[in-house]
Image (tube, one colour):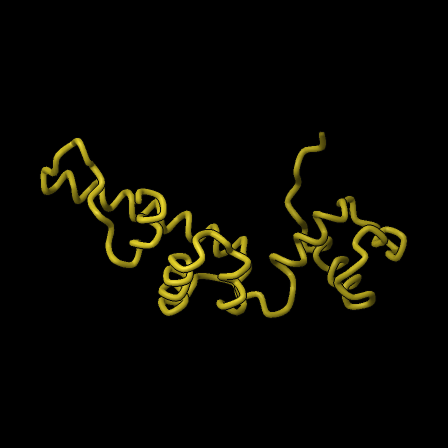
Length: 142
């Protein structure tokens, strides 16, 4: 199996050129349409386009409003990121799922620190999380 390589700016440019000319479809025909081929499989090209290069994809951190919305929607839909993404414009399912995982980790670390400070019982080391994470907590610990 070939080692995974980081995408290079030149490759992103070739991929953008392809999409500008043929649209974001027929990824399996890409090598036939391009003058200079990418050494990438069609699925890799689709994922790169969908998650990083597509117009309208927001880069950087989620705003506090977006964070609150994701927390609320995750409580409603659990981890069905495609549904959540439909209600949080400009972010991909992959991006929101990664944000959620980091958010969960921070919540757990904070709960452990708080329980150590208050001397909580070791039989239940994780106190009930803040209300923003109640949906996640109830789903996983209910």
